[in-house]
Length: 138
Image (cartoon, rainbow, N blue to C red; front, side):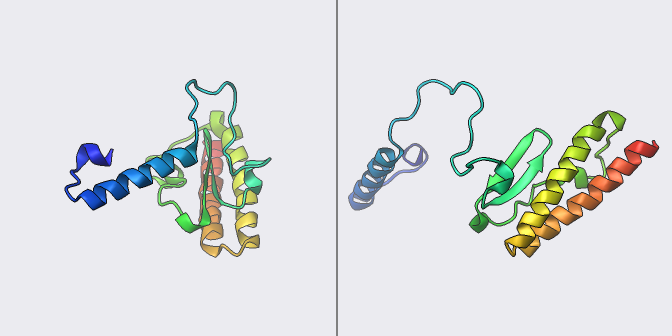
């Protein structure tokens, strides 16, 4: 990609770039030529994704796992905080499951000493409680 979008004029830089690219390809090994069948787990997840030693977020359609060094995601759970987000009684099971997982993630973050991450989860729990209440009362 870099060669396509930029030009490497210096021969030393180009040689080093090609060496690094070759090493990266060798490190990756052979990539699959066909899509995997069935559910594929992320390599850092052994067992339940909620137990992974990573920053986690439960999303309506799945989950997100990031390394702690990546820090909190500015986009995690953004829809639930948006003033345009609406829900109704048909989504109560999804909201309840998301709330339960978020509570688990908040406790996990607190146990790991990740106070900022725990606070993010607690803010989401407050929003989910408000959405659940609004959906139940109509």
